[in-house]
Length: 631
Image 1: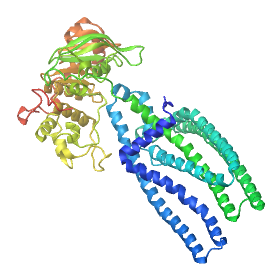
Image 2: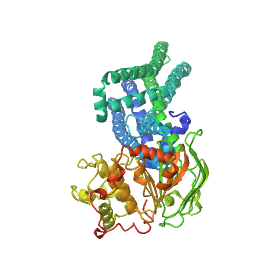
Image 3: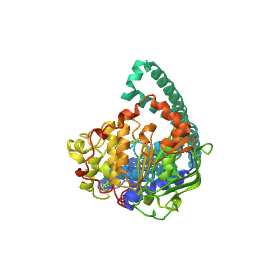
Image 4: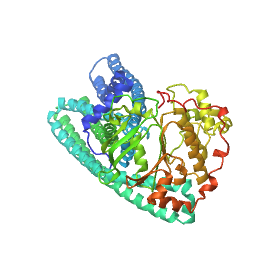
């Protein structure tokens, strides 16, 4: 669901100022305050200057004295104009820096968050809102909020300064001015409440529109849209979503429009009553002409500052929604309490034991239910079963991405909950079904160093060779330093599906962790390619504790033990021969698949189109524990 109003106005403003000072330093706050002061003083003097000129001309003073007085006031005014230009430029730069660099806080929070939260739909929606605080443009989020905050402060100070001058001459006039100000504030607050009331619906409508836009412009959908004549459906869906969005916007903008009418009416009453009062006072002899000009300028300026204050305050309230959204994500992403112990026996093949482990996504039905299982050091296990059986969930539990709802998982007898996650993850190499390369270099994608440590070129070349990618990488424009994809480097290249699978194999080999988990990483390959890829994994993970998942049962016949899962439970265990003899669910599933695939016909094919040659070099991490610093 969309963000809730969990943070008050003052709290959000304090957060904005903390960002400003932390990122740009205390000097930035001083410059922004000076910008407000200059912004109030310069128009104040401009409004008072006609009164000064008339007073000088009618005072009977020597012409040179009058001229010097007027010239001094004009010079001071120009100094303030220059000062305002400088402070405004510097302030805008500070606002931009705060938005840009503040966005790193959101990135850090997302990277540090619990994986279970990050993959949830709720997190996706909240992160989308929080992203708008930093990464949309300068007219939205933190930058605009800061700009509107100081503009609102300037408007309030201008109202006070101008009201003080008016009060010196006509104190009782402050009462109707104050009442009219309260009415305008009340109208503005009512408009904000209306805007908040439709905020969640606006977000949902915007999300629907973005979904339709992405689908309509996605080239992968072009075939279906044209062949099945879905263009009319998209047009109708677009029209419905846009109509809903327009109606919601009409509610929001209509509220602010009516609040604007109230403010305009208050301004009309204020200005009319003030000018009638001043004209009456000048004819009564209570004020002279210079005072009349000064008061007229003050009333006009008071109205301008009031409009500035209310407009800025209204927009500030809108932009603080994004600040609230970020702060909610920040709270949600706070690292959960975790263990502090190091993983036992680092770099060695581990025993993994599950003791009555259950896991539920929504608290109702278990995706994994009351599972007790021991995976012995160096053992190769296959997890098989229909979609939704709980295989992927079990893999995420094994490597610590999920925490059991109940029960415990032990690594060499040590409760995983007591182990520091970074230390735990060093012991696992995992390849998931939805694997993809990042738009970094080949070397970075394989080593995952991220610049934190140097890439070992010998180790990199050996792992690429064993993954059958050495020739491909050697033919790239910059070898292993070639970027994948064009997101970062326009000259980047793309890999085929099979090449991406081999890249993931090279990554797992480079890390060299003692536990290897493969969650259907070859699902997109044909049966022959998948069989060859799994046999390569079998060969190159000798001596490691390994768990293989495949939806094609023939691909995992090499495993020492096969676990057949249904509805989160392991219902059958044994070797392929034992499970076939039991004539249970595994046997029925295997026989069904055997009707479509000639298993024996691919059993003797060479792996990955060539025989493996040990003389070409081995990955340094294949026959012993991995680098403790590998992440």
